[in-house]
Amino acid sequence: MNLSSLLAAPATNPHARMHSAGERYVVIDDLLPAADFEATAEAFTRIRLKPVLSTIDPVYDGFAHRGGEERQELARNADDTPRWQRAVKEQITAHLDLLAAPGRAEHLSLTLSAWGYPAGSRLGWHNDAGAGRIGAYVYFTHRAWDSAWGGGLTVFDEESRADAADGAALVNSARHPTLILPRPNRLVVFRAHTMHAVQRVDTTAGDRLRRTWTGFITEDTP
Image (cartoon, rainbow, N blue to C red; front, top):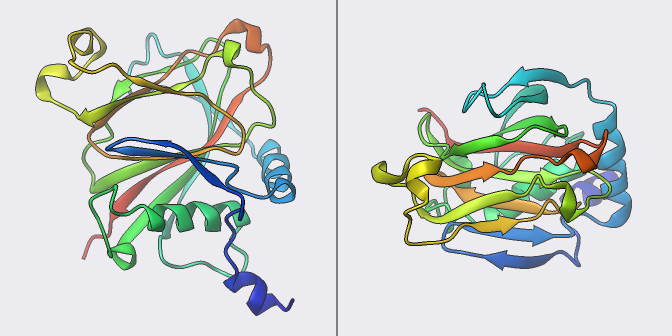
């Protein structure tokens, strides 16, 4: 297979499957073939992550670790675009209806940041609203995870409301949150204005990081 044929072929694993979906989110398992995921996980371990305080609740969320931020057009790839980025873009494009943006791939961009959550850290409830965001994604890149280690992504599958903008108010919500476990090689895409949080990583995780590539899907500014 020549280079042009390789780049034109889908990066998504042909055996990828939709694990679950709601009105405002979708969960896709086995996003990459095993060899591509292993290469992605290995490359992640070489990223220099720096501790940063949470912008949601810097007192109680604790420190997470972050590795830079990049912005790319959703509908375009360079010759050296990593396989995981191609696959994430493919799946976002396939689910633009979920983001209320059907047929708008040419007018959208996404950001890409590496995140590592150590034991003791979490991210409080928020909705990713503003700054032209129409959605977000989380791609889990650790090689192994145990549900006892926490770090799950919790999502309220409804449009966020002014009367339920924090954890205390959400207790009175008519819906229960959905817990999405941080399974390796799992991609989650969800719409902006959706309340979500990252559960605290338990001390039983030891020195293991909850590793993700995470970013926003945004409308391009004319």
